[in-house]
Image (tube, one colour):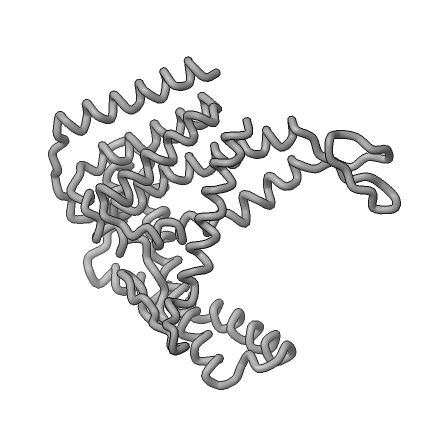
Length: 300
């Protein structure tokens, strides 16, 4: 238990460190800031995951293979519910994304840091409880009740955090190496209803369109001192929110007209490239799945 807590704490510390270290770029000794201009990042514009997927060195792998491996690993993380399996999945998915895909470690940890707040908020409510009298190994008196926790609760929280991170790592491996069009192609092959697939594609594309519009509007407001104080910031936020609604409707009409001009008849058709699956990849993936099951069997 103690070793697993230490591993989890070290991982979270590494994520927070790299998130803070590269949040505003690198600062030299002379006080000047040098921002990293990475793939998909432009000042004033949104960031699309597809930029990373197209730059990945394992993009040429078969999309069905990557999606199947990711989903199967995700299912095993949930079903097996074992911290050792979760740690193995985190390490394996990080190896595929960073080492094989040649993805930046800083960017990878930065992306993983995004769901940390939601995970901590969700697990915090599991870790603590309230009582009128002292209970558990750790408690704090607030004047009208006790806030307490115990080794069992902390153990549950640590295992849950590891399981969630393992599941996120599996999905990140898929999204950071497989463009959205290829994922949609796999869903079509899996006979997912056409309406769901097309809605997923349109919503995914439209999210980044709105992010790009919002970023430009925010930069424009900042250049006009729209965030100089709290009152002005609230007024600016309200103005941007109202403009976003109007602009989103205009963008929706414009993009639908563009689709109609290109003979849209209800089907979204993408260029689909056939990629062969290597026997070596299948063997290694099968060995990895068997390893996870054996690890669960020996450590449960």
